[in-house]
Length: 479
Image (tube, rainbow, N blue to C red):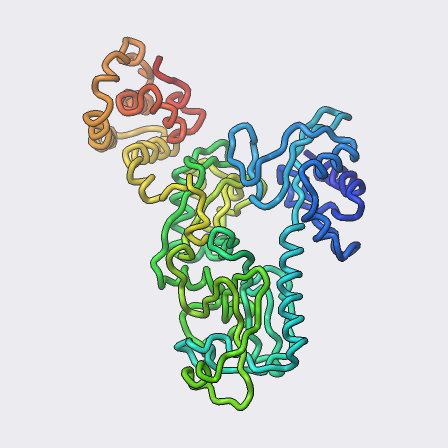
């Protein structure tokens, strides 16, 4: 759809929202019309958006002249919906009666805008009631910078999308306390720790990106489809990626002096519906060697950790890849031209989003990527052979023998374990005489026959993940 048409649809819907929403431009080529809360026009827009029901949204769309054809389940990966949107935003599929075209519409910003304002307002009110006070980021920390009380006079929001959401304003800027603020009371109600695309130079991130893409089905040069509802990979507890994922890109190497704390190196990660400022008792202050004639305060919430402690258990950070057709991923920044050519992909694709999640936040259907790759190692190997074939268009006799030996070794494991009796009936004359034109297709024919043995019937559907659509192997299915 043309960007001008998307803008026209968005403005019509915004006009019927009573000032709650405004059209928000999306990246060029994005598959949906995006609207966001118009807090600049109405300060209570976030609160109003949060109160809207599904029927309210449908009425808004109908009043704008559109027919609602489907409600997209939040965070859906259902095959009947071609795109997947954020789990927290209402999304609908609508039909334009003027030309019969269909379009996704996403209403963004209501919930997060309202909650962030409430959290910030709660802290601001507490500090206003107490006046300038001494606050210690973490009296139990091993780092002097975290144990040091500082005089706080207010709270301010952080603009843009750095790691910090807010900071406690001190009399001296060097004493500001930077906070990554999360909503809720448990790991399941936690948002993500953050995105991963800005961390693509990290070896662990780079490997995760490439392994996910290699395990996915290439739908087109611009789009992939994950081979599972989502994938995850655990992180070593004190790895560089765990540190920067939780505390920000400037948080590594661990130090309280080499790099100053700021918007990309936070003091505290704080989860709370409404954060609180609580006083330390005299006993606590003495226990932590905090000598002051004044009362010293700390921040409290459902879950509080301070730099550089990495949460464990339900809050342990893990890499997560989930379906997402609404955003673009610039894989050209971390894949070479040769890798892109081999994968059959362009430098910018859709179909996946990479995030760092707390472990308990993972969907129950998410699969361990390493376990998936290990289970599918034989087919991954065959896929790699076929991809290489697309580049070379031919094999030497040595190549053919090597391919045949390696493929057979992996496939025989599955053949002996699962498929021997089921497959015998599937060998007929058509399969034996397929592809007799040249060396390349003879090798493909042999691999094809081996794949028949290992992935016949219900298993053979996976073969399309390991070849490009223009290779005949992907078109034939055993009868």
